Length: 92
View 1 (spheres, rainbow, N blue to C red):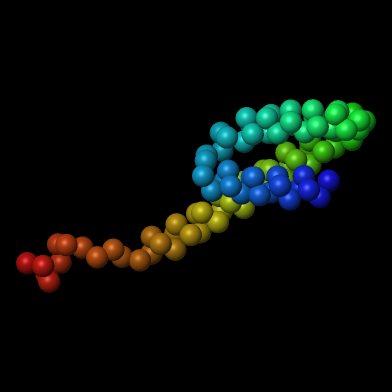
View 2 (cartoon, helix red, strand yellow):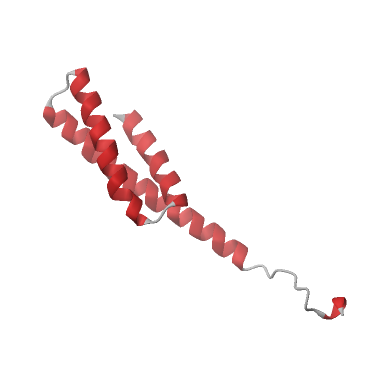
């Protein structure tokens, strides 16, 4: 279970740093299908599979939020610095 939590947080943060929110539903469906197949192959009960999928979806969303916030904070830090301009007095 902890492996699912860690990997879903990492995947969510990568998705949050790169994509918009519309990537979450397909990622959750794809991940749920993969986890369901793996869980059935291991012989786990259906209740256990549902719990794993719900934990995966929740941690994926949390990771997405953290990744998106990190990108936003880093972008605002770079926006604060003024870029040098070629229109300034030193180049005329």
